[in-house]
Picture 1 (tube, rainbow, N blue to C red):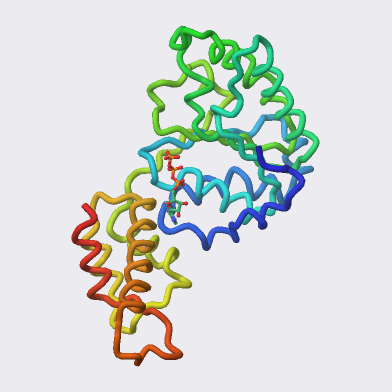
Picture 2: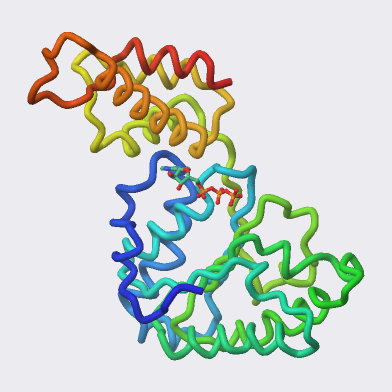
Amino acid sequence: MRDITKPVKEGGYSGWEDVGGLDDIQNSIKEIIELPSKFPNTFIQSPLRMRSNVLLYGPPGCGKTHIVGAAAAACSLRFISVKGPELLNKYIGASEQAVRDIFSKAAAAAPCLLFFDEFDSIAPKRGHDNTGVTDRVSQSKLDGVEVLTGVFVFAATSRPDLLDAALLRPGRLDRLLFCDFPSRRERLDILAVLSRKLPFADDVNLDAIAHMTEGLSGADLQALLSDAQLEAVHNFLDSENGSNQGKMPVITDALLKSIASNAK
Ligand code: ATP
């Protein structure tokens, strides 16, 4: 489990500039986190509890984990990230204790963002786990979420159909945000964000690559760019004429297009 005393920006996220597309989700998260973070006293005194606990759901690789890390960095919140399976322990009581410990750490680290990734593994529908571990954790898990001050609880799953519906009632994970496959415009945004530091040739046309990659997730686009980078290095090392002296491997439009056309 990550050390919660580490400032979030060490986790590699800078802020919203790390995220391509997902505009509606960014806006919802801003509304949920930014105002209460900037004006905590106003929100603490407000008679109605704000809905600040979020479930992100959608296909794998579509940016659920990524946007939460970027949000924490953008809002300068400490980031406590736990993968659901890390909390499971076959010994009676150990998993429940691990969950209680996480909430205590989050309360002590407030203001912070507590994130449960792969949430379905610890919160399945009742009776769907024959070891009983997840059922016990599920029952204890979100007790206390309603009273935590300065802790934004986020969870993510690619299998919302497996979740215990009791966890989605008001006061628990009561904001549901859907991360879908990116549109063409979003793929262009994601490619631009992920390639900021890549050595592109002048002829690279990311719009054409976005057009060619319908159906790919952000994670697929990340893999495409990594493959292009590796291929560019190979090409560079393979070239025999010695003219590479003092130059760097460059990713050309033709190389990107050839990888994109095989990526589906
Ligand atoms: P899973 O359900 O498998 O956990 P996920 O939806 O949480 O998937 P992420 O881990 O957030 O997916 O995305 C994987 C990688 O894809 C990220 O680390 C990032 O490099 C890239 N990525 C995905 N979506 C975006 C996006 N909208 N903007 C920038 N990068 C993205």
